Length: 169
Image 1 (cartoon, one colour):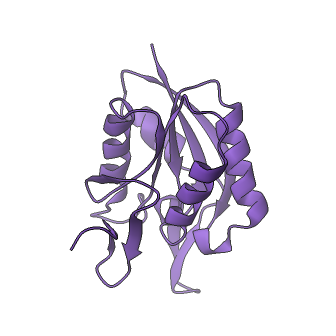
Image 2: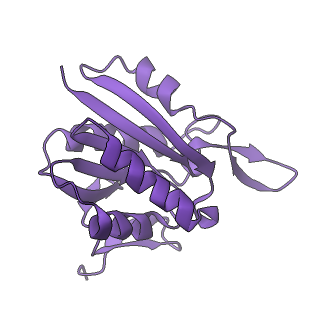
């Protein structure tokens, strides 16, 4: 049985709403393992929590930690949960710096926390990433809004609340 390795960095997908700050704040510990296990997938799952931060707060060391977690993983299928603001930057960083070329790596996240909000785009994005990691060729990808993007093309359009390609009109 194959294994999907989830590498967790926080972001809105793994956040809760803090009324005193009037914003979503990453949880202390990820709920992604609980959520994925509840799906009863036909693949095994492994989880590595690199950090729990809003992606705008990620440091060079955090991004390096993601790279190291991917490089050290014994698995060929990797899903990285990540905040949406700097997801394209991390995808490009990984694409430029990975020495391994045998892994299919998908970054995904959400605009709305996965727990405590209905509807949330998080469950869909996670499910879509799980489906895509099974069929894509090795490489680095971003899977958001029902589409797979390469690191070189992907951008977040904040005013539309979605991702798109710089090559699309």
